[in-house]
Amino acid sequence: MGQRLENRVQLNEEQKEAKTKIFNVPISVIVGKAGTGKTLLACHTAVTNLQDKKHGKIIISRPNVEAGDTLGFLKGGVKEKMSPYTYPLEKNFEDIVGVSAYEKLVADKKIEIIPVGHLRGVTFVDSTVIIDESQNVTREQLELIIGRLGKGSQIFFTGDIKQCDLNNNSKNSMTILKELSEYLSDSEMCYIELTTNHRHPIIDKVLTFFEENYDKVLKKVAG
Image (tube, rainbow, N blue to C red):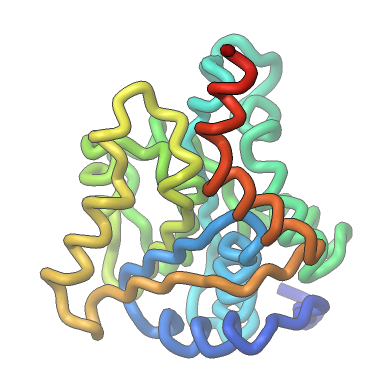
């Protein structure tokens, strides 16, 4: 790969502990409310896998359902079409390794962006796979994704069930992943919930307000 990759972002203590738990598990689920660093943890661990030559590639994907658009409505190739959806992932990688190093990883196909809908027929070989915003993955897509896992590879699912944008929330994959983690052994699957906010400290108060008062506010507006 040429130059040695450098992890420029420090994880907090909760993330460091979580990283040790997910590091050698084939399937990991990282959940938590907004601002807890779910995606950062997955990206950070994926970079370490590349550094240590544990895996030779990172595959990133996420469903594109929140705006009601499909890839066909956006110009360009797959990367350009996926860019609005994968921006948070790409930004995390840029922060972790630097912009030029990230761009080189993409150019060398050490990092690949694949839409969830294009995963059929793909086998994840020698790869760290990140499925971001997994609360918007349907049951059918979840079965498809896990069925792509090849020997020696890992999948990280990140998400927050409270941010689900699916029309039918009963198909939300996060509840299925929770039950699956209870069915499989700890060495086969890890379910981690992050609680520490790593963004602005006001976020916790704002989220608590919405959780406790949102219905009251709606009634006032309607009334």
